[in-house]
Length: 595
Ligand SMILES: Cc1cc2nc3c(=O)[nH]c(=O)nc-3n(C[C@H](O)[C@H](O)[C@H](O)COP(=O)(O)OP(=O)(O)OC[C@H]3O[C@@H](n4cnc5c(N)ncnc54)[C@H](O)[C@@H]3O)c2cc1C
Image (tube, rainbow, N blue to C red; front, side, top):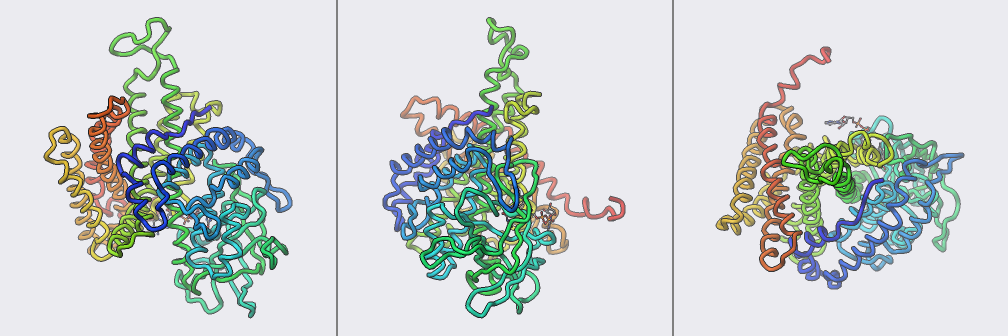
């Protein structure tokens, strides 16, 4: 079996010691109660739920999966009960407004909660994960009546949300979608079309489903500018808000997948289903981005979460499994062999995993702190800067979090040798489960294009320059310190490399229409590694200061892992720089017929 204990110590280190998040949060309007103590209490409760309820059913979820019969989806044994406990604990509405029954807590805290839930059971976490995005979209764009009817139910978790975008011929390119919405003349619309790959489209854990569906009005312009968003409930709410008549929004079948088997993925048939417009006509894609931006960060947390569980499991196995002898002398003379943790290759896999996961977590928490600042800060310029940081980091948290999630679950499976490939230890489940996170919510190639094509282009690089100013402030504050030299020097080099290659890419794309597309995925990885170096510098600085007053091996380990990152991971940026500068002709010259 895999091993998972919520990494509370590390989470608190990031939250309280590195980012001092409570100081920032409690100064924001509406978050006066979000003290360090309160956040710690929430994290403790979440850890109990994850370790005691959600993690134990992760395996059965994979083995039994969801079943489909006569339009009804049954979730695996224990899921309904576990979800009930989750909903009754108020977790669905952690960040939702108290006006609708939510707890009004920060997104910063929600990130850590989501990571824990994902680590324990990624499948079950996806159901409420989508509901949270639905809540956000309705709270931002819904009519007062929609908010009144739907939000308390979604926040309470008795109803769940979905996101219905994809059609068979319209995946990354949503401008191709064909689902139609025809006005009924009474303010409602008839929605007709088939959506595929819809997570949580139908199941037995919720009393009602609230689908947010992208469709075209009769007068819609072609392409992505002609898409509107509709709210389509499974059961039409009665006057008193309880579920009434069955709507014509029905699951036609469910997919049989590589992993994430306890999270149902449905074909949804809308056959003149009754729905209501959310937000403005033809502006549905922009409206859906309220949900998608939240979900992209959430999917990033899924990648990080699987890597964490894989790392913990591999570290435990490496201490236990006896094979071979240590190169620098027998470590366990009383045993027939030494534990495999003595071998450099095993060490390298564990160190790599940990160096990436800890950086990703810190970067994700920093990004979510900016989400809270962007939502709540009194000063407009501060809000704008925070929003810029979130915009820049969203594709990085999503794509790097999930690409490394896949890489780390694989490298940790390797620690188990053949015992990782067979099912018994659960490592292959992590590899299978995390794989989808690189694909859904916009594939990682689409995330990379968002970074290079859109985010870097905003006002001649305003977002990039805003982030650089944060990094430069860190460097300026620490570069005179001898003890930080081995960390600051590689960070400075990496930042200079990133800045130069960003400029190169901009110049190159003036002459070559494929330049950005050819560079995007490698560029995102280079950017992510540079951002990790920055956050590692901040973590090492914090650990050094704490070490001066506390004799706690936690801080020594933190500094050592940071050192490993700088020396053995960050140099990947040198290769990535060369790869990016090789340009697009390397891949675009071979004639299509030669493939
Ligand atoms: C398990 C699962 C759950 C899902 N859940 C949901 C859900 O709840 N709601 C929902 O609406 N959808 C959902 N999806 C759909 C998912 O978001 C899409 O599969 C994804 O966006 C990619 O679309 P596609 O599969 O059509 O691939 P395509 O768009 O056909 O892409 C194929 C390949 O081409 C690449 N590509 C496409 N366009 C470009 C481009 N312009 N530049 C460079 N590369 C490009 C892609 O990166 C990919 O590698 C889910 C999918 C799965 C498998």
